[in-house]
Length: 331
Ligand SMILES: NC(=O)c1ccc[n+]([C@@H]2O[C@H](COP(=O)([O-])OP(=O)(O)OC[C@H]3O[C@@H](n4cnc5c(N)ncnc54)[C@H](O)[C@@H]3O)[C@@H](O)[C@H]2O)c1
Image 1 (cartoon, rainbow, N blue to C red):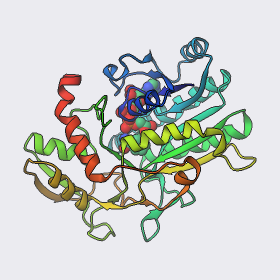
Image 2: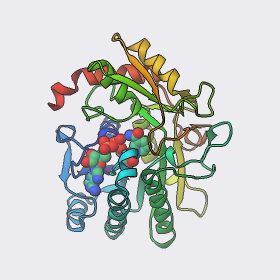
Image 3: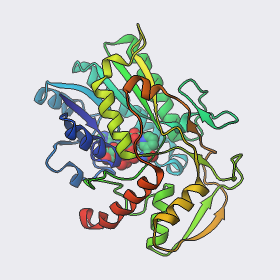
C-alpha cells in the first residue's frame, strides 16, 4: 500500500512516515518545507511543493496510481502566531486545504485522514472530553481545524470520499530510533521551552497558574509521537471499518486518557533532565486555555490501538533527540 503524506517532512509527518515504512506501507511525501526538513525525507519518495498545487498533485497520482489514502498533516501550527496573523492561518490551513481536497477528489483517492487537534474542544467541569464534547476553539489556529473538519464532512456527503479526522492531544517525544524529532531549534511549546531553558540557561516561564485545575496550571494529555504514529498505521489498515453504517465521516481522539498538569509535567522533566531549571510563574499567553484530556475509548475500540509509552519516556526521548538534533539538521 502507498499513502500520500502531506506535511510528511514535518515533526509528526516524518514520524508517521517512519511508522508506515516499518509496517510495510510506502509513504509518498508532499511538503513545501516551510517548517519541514529535507533531511527527514532522505531515502523516501518526496515531492517538494504546495498542497494547493493542482498540476503537482496530478503528477503525484499519475506517478503513483496505487496511492490508497491521503494523510493531511500540512499546516501552520503556532497558536500565538495565529492570533497575530489570522489571515495567514486561514489562507494556509483552510484555503489551501480547499484546493488540496479538490485535487485529491479529482484524482479519485477516496480515503482521507486529517490531522485535527484537541485544541478545538470546550472541556466540561472535569476537563475530560470525548469526541461528542462541545467545540469551542479559542484561537485562529484551532478555528482553522474546526473549519477544515466541517468542510471535509460536507465533502463526504457530496463526493466519493471518506474522511477520518484524528484529533491529536499533546504530542511529545521523538521516534525511538531517532530518525526524526522536533526540527525547530527554539520550539514554542511546553517541552521545547523547557529544553531551551536548560540548554541555554534561560528562565522558564510557567505561563498560566490560575486555571481551574488541581494545581492551577493548565492540563494536557501528553501522547508519545510514536504512539501517535502507530495509531495512523492502525487507522490506515482499518480505514474502511471505522465508519458508522451509512456514514463517511468519523472522528477519533488520539490521547492517553490521562490528564497531566503543566506543573506535574515540569516536575517529570526535572526528574528526567540532569540540568538545573530556573522557573518563574507568569500570566497565560494569547490563545492559551485550561486544556483537557480525553476520556474516550473510541481509538481502542475502532483501531485496536492503545498507547504504550509514558510521559517520562516521551520526555526522555525528546531529550535524546535534542542532544543529536544539531548534528542531524545543522543550526
Ligand atoms: N504538534 C502538535 O502539537 C499538534 C497537535 C495537534 C495537531 N497537530 C497537527 O499535526 C500536523 C503536523 O504538525 P507538526 O507538529 O508535525 O508540525 P510541522 O510544522 O512540523 O509540520 C507541518 C508540515 O507541513 C508542511 N506544510 C505546511 N504548509 C504546507 C503547504 N501549504 N503545502 C505543503 N506542505 C506544507 C511544513 O513544511 C511541515 O513539514 C498539523 O496539521 C498540526 O496542526 C499538531
